[in-house]
Length: 258
Image (cartoon, rainbow, N blue to C red; front, side):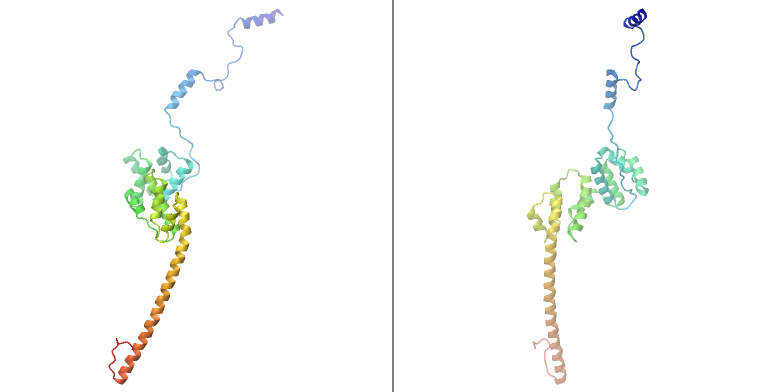
């Protein structure tokens, strides 16, 4: 009993050994000083999210516009930061494009995405940003509405690459202005607020316009056919008159009405 009390007294008296063992370093709580130091270090770092596993298609040469359009969609879907875009797409350059870009990096370090896109188009399509803007402004519907939509969206992506501040109303107005005259008035009447709605209305108006053009064409062909028959009948009369003149020696004028 005395030994037990003595042990308690020694512990209560404050021996050099702690009552509980010291936890391992990886389990113990950080001190306030350590937390402050960690926060100070974190302030100078840029947070870089994990990049998506889905890869872009490789680009070595060919049509840079189509590839840039895919890049634009990729960036939107995975919320790629502006400062990451050029470094990311570099991994998907191959062959001629990769060799070209290595030289560009040395000549222009710190290249941003807009500059990269413009240089890529100049190198592999022979068209820079000014040519793209001019082509977009002059774009007109020649074939079907769907063909016009595809070309419009291709150039729209490049326009946004050059000027991301262009809004939806600008593209809606540009799309309508390039439609064929037989489709444009009806699309304007619906006053679409989005490009997708303008596409939908234009496609719906295209069928009646095609039907009307077919009917006009058929009417014209019928008229041409009728006139051609009259001309043939007149030629037969002229031929007959010439034969009579030769056989009888009459002085019939060929231009005289029979």
